[in-house]
Length: 570
Image (cartoon, rainbow, N blue to C red; front, side, top):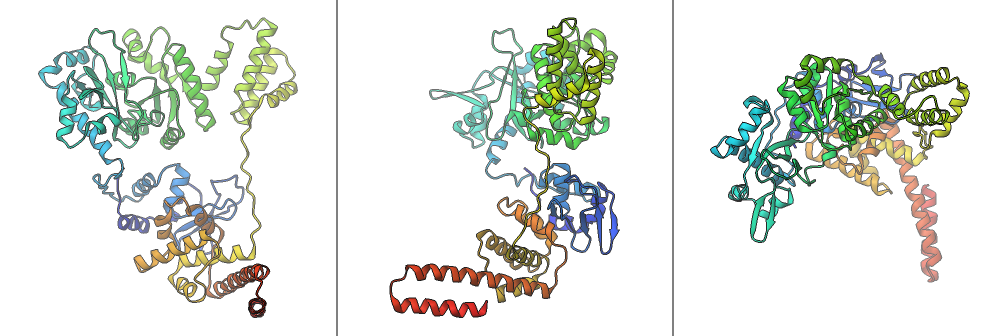
């Protein structure tokens, strides 16, 4: 939700040489005035990625990827624009000053409510009303340092939160909408009444939800969680990720556990590179965040049937996204904290070091409850294995098929045939189709590209043309002209930053950038002529249509004369 001014973004872009940044990711070679590299965005075997130090842009003529330094980092790292800016700043040593007050205006109220709620709950825990809850936490080994690290607090069994937030200017409707209170007639009670409160932060660090845990002997549910709201979608959050990300980077490993209390307890034992799922579903957004860490993934979910099913579901989603996790299953303990208390911290660390690959874990799981001396069970096992390896690379498939063939004395070709038959849904391979463009399309792309490069082309466009027949092209031209008027200049790298959030036209602009490399005035003027001719042809079509509809003989003659005049110009 942070804000960076356009002026600062432009400054960062100018200080970040695109050749240097891309060189951190790819091996680049100088070729004339430009640099080239193997394109990472398609199956490239010859250097088709061109980097222009003069214009500070990159383009690939094969897969049509293009843009400035931020666009490259966004695409390569699978991150949003803000994260790309931060990454570029880190690489060039730029001290980025983000204004935390200029948050998303639409959701600012929701984030502020949660910020106040955290402070209110934390204060409760440190009053006389929090003595019993504080004692419960200390008895579990959660000391003051951990309490402060996770901002753990206490919800009271009264209307205190409602009264506190109303004094801050929020309504009961506001509070109810984000899951903080329940209404009962004219009264409004804390949704988490009389529970220990564990704040849940999103991937950027803002508190967006809570888990409330009972600490007294009561028949109530042990845990309750915030409902999904405008700022909280549980599949898009990993508990403790924001606090853990520096430890994950340091250790090179991310440990995923099942519940947020598991993550807290492991932190008590000094294991800080740990996050927790907020549900079995794991979204594409979380996958992207995990990929960004470049860390080895360890799945250490609960040692019960629910934990087993969650391990398989999450593991398969990770495999589909080219993340190969290891699996740690802790026997003789329901969770990591109990395991450490029973067998010691060294024993847990040994388990973490010797986790199974997800494939080995899955193959062993498929053997469970099967009699592998029975033909029927062996056949069932082999079918399940073939179905399970669909998402793996060809080398892994080959090794599994060899092993099955050798172990069960089955012809490998027969296994291959059954493997192919078991694949119900195949990934569509990335096929790059080079579209045949008309002279008009080539010309208008050239004109738009040139206008992004230099203001002199904008002046010629306005003098000689000023119009495209397609609405999308007119919108792009208008944005280019607006940018030039507003900033009194234009260059393609800064314009890319300005326009990249406009999802309506950015894909086309990115393609244009990737399609053209050099421009000159002679070719620009020739392209103007191509567009003018095409517009005149369109005008003739419209006149012919009018001719068919017109019944007045004199007006028909006027239209025919007009058509004849335009044809001479064409």
